[in-house]
Image 1 (cartoon, rainbow, N blue to C red):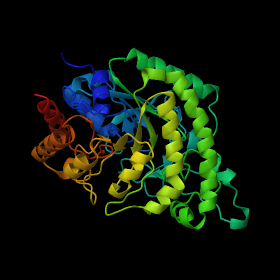
Image 2: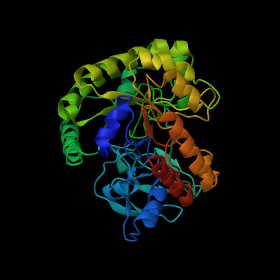
Image 3: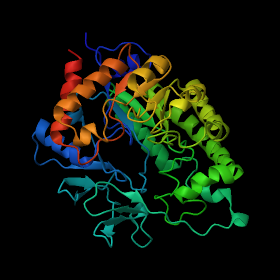
Image 4: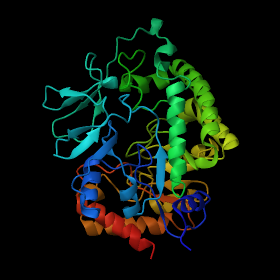
Amino acid sequence: MPMTSRERLQRTLNHQQPDRVCVDFGATAVTGIHVSVVHRLRLRVLGDTSWRVKVIEPYQMLGEVDDELRAALGIDVIGALPRKSLFATEARDWKPFTCFDGTPCLVPGQFNVAPAPDGGWHIFPEGDTSVSPSGHMPKGGYFFDSIVRQEPIDDDKLDPANNLEEFGLFGAEDLTHFRERKQWLEAHKASGAMLVVPGAAFGDIALVPAPFLKHPKGIRDVEEWYVSTLTRRDYVRTVFEKQCEIALQNIATLTGIFGDTVQAAMVTGTDFGTQRGPFISLEAYRDLFKPFHKQVNDLIHRRAGWKTFIHSCGSVYQFLPDFVEAGFDILNPVQCSAAEMGAARLKKEFGKELVFWGGGVDTQHTMAVGAPEEVYREVRERIDIFNQDGGFVFDAIHNIQGNTPIENMLALFRAIKDSGK
């Protein structure tokens, strides 16, 4: 008998062969599809010209993969996201919007933009146009970049509390949000279920500039932060220690709310690799990050039994034994195009310890500029390698970008379908 999506994900997480490859598009902010592509997919697959896709993650302009489209495409996993986006917008009060490429969509009510000098758009934290913008999309672009709003740094007056402003125990609105998300997951109990844990990503460079804060303080410049992991390591460690203390209390709350409704939890999106090699030294990871990762993962495993998910781009081969020791069960996005990240090698050496969630096709090249037959071939090859004996959730290498040809998307899903025959 065919498995339900939930059963398929569970077998995959247990490193057992599922009936077909498990598929995720849209369960997290790092496994999604640009709203323009979701719009074109809906038109081709479902033919509904009146439907406007919701932008559920404004920073990267990711579109919602709704129930009808998910069923039509054979997508297995759904996710519970935090209450607020990277621009501190909430998923409510939807209003119409049109992207630069002409895509009609819906955006949150707090999604407020203003013209930028280059013809692009500026976006504001919490939609407050009375403060400085925190994000910029260039004219003709597809997503926003954070605007660094670094105040002058005086080392004698640096206070770790300034880099902790965004972390706090859940309030009443957060608890209501997560209880509603649990009810939503329970209403979709045949689907695989992922929870995105807020506040447990130590040093995530997408979060350091704090595009969600109106007046960020502390170290908020990207380069300055990376330098600080070496030159101000005690400061950074103090930030992480307090962040971890808060995260552990919030995780205890989340495990109590969701229980066995959830099967996996995304813990962190901090990148440790580049295209050609590591972003930081292995020594720095072991000293500054690994102890906090282990505390978080141990608590999740002990209290809920959820599998834990780390998103780290680039060449992270050298870090994989330490990721395993830190308690991570799942690696994403599995950037096979990066140095030392060949699919066959990863599966052979770490396939019994790590679930590979991603790596199904290269979004930088194959999806963006390749021919449909190249997409089809690469998808089939990656499924053949990674899905042997389970332990593989199909997703692309990071989010599907807005300039992806629709024929390539159709080739991708055709290859997934054919792999199950």
